[in-house]
Length: 201
Image 1 (cartoon, rainbow, N blue to C red):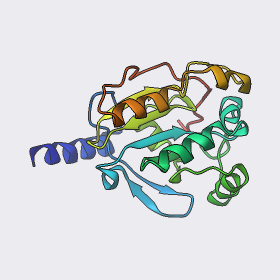
Image 2: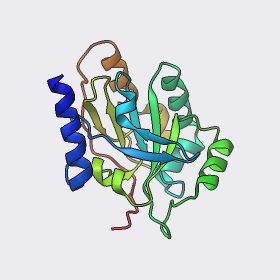
Image 3: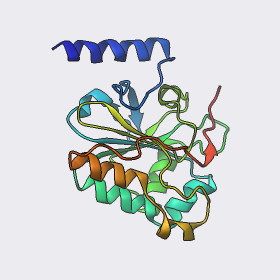
């Protein structure tokens, strides 16, 4: 019960101040965000599941590396089939690269055969700032206890070259595999790479 109250307190602090960024090893701040189909999601609703947050920008060459190759879609399908909740998050502000309407995002996901649980639209940047998302892509993993266990790059090849994917070390898959096996995450943080998130402020 005490942990529940602490979680609620953290949520209220994060939402009211906007200054409490997520940190590995600590409870992930709760959020409410609306997806491209108009459905609201809260992190608290997925307590008991692994949750992946994937920051996204259609126009970013680093994002295109993982989508045009099919790599991101493969990851989404593999891990959602294992019960992971996977949110694509778009924090580009109106008028900036990567900003999309709900219809545009849904059309993109159909064309790319993307398979996240949902695409969360964050044009105000509130969710992005809450997690201090810096790049597209920037990946976060939250465990079933609501603790952030990974923050960083998708892999160890910080280039826009699709050919690098085959020889890369995928930090997201590694962290999920280790955590699901009850092991500590061997690489809990890494430097994210990609285009800067196009925040409104």
